[in-house]
Length: 267
Image (cartoon, rainbow, N blue to C red; front, side):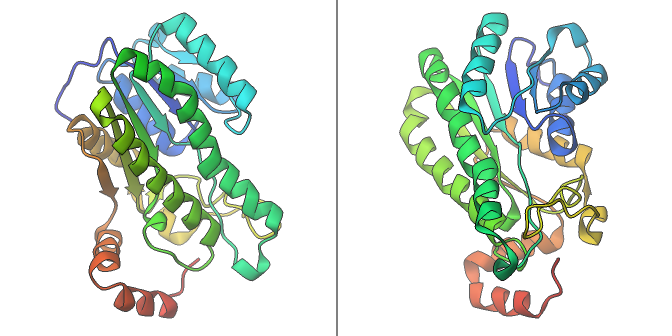
């Protein structure tokens, strides 16, 4: 990645304890940014912090993003210690591996809470600070699944599509006030996302999907993503040839795409 000095910029990453969040944290830190790492487990955040250059300038803030009181407390801690927020990377998420007919309403709501409402809550909490600064960049990690609906991922796809549309509205409202908004759509990335994906009764699947195992390396994903973000791209699809082709077909020939999806073995 071409070097760009982010030395004075504060980057807050949710879901920073593993996978895409960890990789993005490392990529931003290597450009000199000061990282705020958030996830539920402090021990894992400390592990990630130890991987970053200039460890003393980074901050671990354990946080359950579905808890609005914890979000507000975390925000006050970040502002007290860093004084500003330049980037909010809404990355924390929860995937799904269950047919609609087998998914309980409790599981439906849990996925929407983590993948949509929590991102909305985080952004609404941080937004007054960005507006006061008249600067900042809000990033949402959506998914190609938010552009293409497939079997076993109905609620996940719906949540990722919802945050995409919410982000589009946010961008329209704050662009004139110096705030950038980007949405990233990962395809298959090699992380633990499918291991932790919820089945219909709300339990973790407990094993990795073959497609995920063969996906893009998380570090490569992060490098491509940060490069695009620094170029202020707003709509960023990162994935393999099949995922990018699917996204293109979803715009140009959706009926053809969904005929193929119905025939595919997807899980």
